[in-house]
Image (cartoon, rainbow, N blue to C red):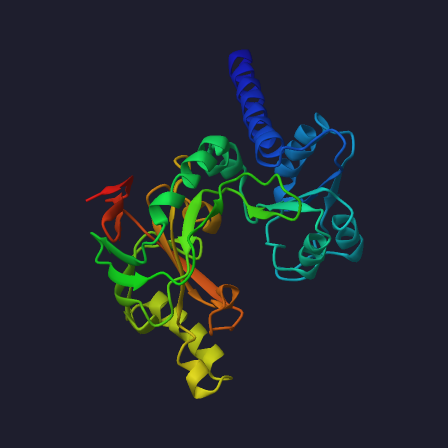
Length: 344
């Protein structure tokens, strides 16, 4: 009996220590919090264990640490209470460890507009993900590796993605590759999701053609059967005749009803493409974790207005492709899910 109890206590202590180790990584490595900086941790009852670990780690660095608990009545997509929004504007560092994302709220936007506050968000993160998944990556090493891609991407515009699942798609890039999703959030005004570790790009409008087969996850849900999409001139023109394919089409079609014909025709735009670099992440059915899995590809569908695109519908959905091959002209970036980044 006492042996079993001792084991439970040991496991409990080990678990608490793993949570604190991850929290220290967020505070000291990702955010690089300094002793004079005020830190606000916003959490909720679903994520309170993570919130407490972050509070403890922050308090080791600065005595200007505050934790706010969101009310249980808070609904997905709604603004946080006014007093939380006001506090967010007055901090150097804000950490959002909540079940629902607050990234797109006015409260977050207003905090960023101060030009002072840097923000890390971890919507929907579980304790298991926090203590053992992509969160536990060596973010300094990840930043160095991702920055090394800058020279590879230069002056190369044509991309082809294939996979054993049936993906075969080509497109040209419409903007510079983004290489700043590396986990290091140490500059005023920065906003970053954790876990991090991906590179991504805006496909040039009208340039994408072929087939995409999503076989990993869709919107943070593991797939029992793949979703196949035929793409013409950057827009989905045909989708799998299964339940999920029908549901996705119905969502886009409903949005299209309120738009004129030309706008309705592009609601199913492929808005973004990227691939993961985080070796500690796994496809677990969480949106943030799945898209940073090392060697997995992801496609974003819907609104591309953040890149200056025409499809301003206020909705994005994304899916993950497993073990892709990604070619950038004469460079093999990824081969069967392995990052290689070398000339053919």
